Image 1 (cartoon, rainbow, N blue to C red):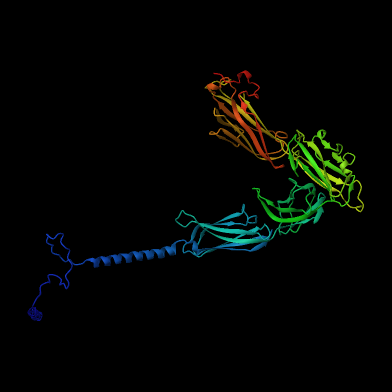
Image 2: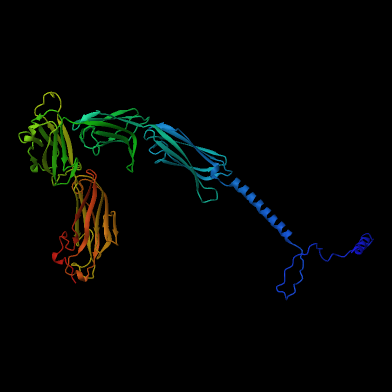
Length: 624
């Protein structure tokens, strides 16, 4: 080996010497070789190849760098050119609180901090609930302003004004919503901002003048005072009075407009004060507290009542010296049907510490809805000249002397009139007020000059009479019919059906008429006039949704009715029969005056057609 190295040295320094290329890379450590598949086979010689991985790695790294550079550039471009909600600022400037009825103004500022303009922009401003909007052209409580484009860095300012109304210390929301559509896009975006305002004082002040305590059964005067705290004229106001149980209304100045508890107020000027006076009788137990509540506000088209002011007052009842407590059929208040008999019982008691002698009990009846000739009084008498029932010691021995703490009863029976005379639209909401009083015939010693009488009042309200009539016709000019008469097996004959409603004394709501067609009948979908009628072919149910039905319909105004057509194809097993054409016919509704649910039904309409004057009764059975 050393000889070869010496020879190589000499050749390195020898002029003109050349060297051949090296056949293979020298190896310091042999590479591991794959073992043969079997011991009988000789392993093939391993050929060493030049590694090529380094080129691929540089190519991959270059590609990654190129993609990253594109991504960074795209991110930079998009982040500086896209529209972002985060770079849109909306602010609402305005008062935090306002006196009810006071003018409030808000400024809405919109700033576009994007690098591109906002296109297709519009601002929707929502005023506080119950406000009176002062801005021109605004209907309701939403204002929409078209802004078109808002340039980059531009600020747009808009102003909105309204009178604020609501409860004292009530918080109300104000909302501003920006809508916009980026250029080149069909998708709309929005951003909103919310603010609040508090009603620091109600626009209408409400208070009561009334005694702190009275004796049960005595008449009392309630004064409701209301005053405007607003800086503007208040219009379309209502005052609603809620009275406690066992309060019987006697009179009011001015008179209420509806239901005995609602007044429609004329426009109220700033600072103006007014009073409503109500008189009535309060009954109840010893030390019982009775509360009155008055609310002033506006009722919108949907019927929702927005309160501008409210007041509450309480009276405490004290036990009367002489007590009388009346019940109608065992109840403190009662709604009677026409023709119904009612039983009235009065319980009396002496709460004095001394006896009461020759006591007198009287009942005064008002109204014309009872049959005077059928009034029955037990141990007393009815005086028709002034509609007064009287009990005294000459008719009832128990009243000759009533010892301290002693009690007793007297009673009478009334019958409501079956038919009430209704001539005009004003003939409605009939009732029978009754006032009861007990007093001593002789004042006990020591009570001279003291009012010892006891009082109570009750009111019987008359329930409206809802009536339903059904009629059927073959011969009809309004809706002509076809087919054989008498009805013939296998052939269709059509008939005209008329349903009519009448209503006597009270307004009704939620009135519906229901009827059913048997499976062998068919619905022809012909209705006169065009009404809210639905028909279910699966069940055969027909529903006529009448809605409100005013008092006097069928009396002072025409009856409410619909006309429709049905078809009948008889089957062989119906020969000789008079089948039903319409069955289970009924009407229902709610009496608003008496708060009673009414329901009435009529017999099924058959092939007999009693209402058709031209029909031959011999032709009202099915033939072959």
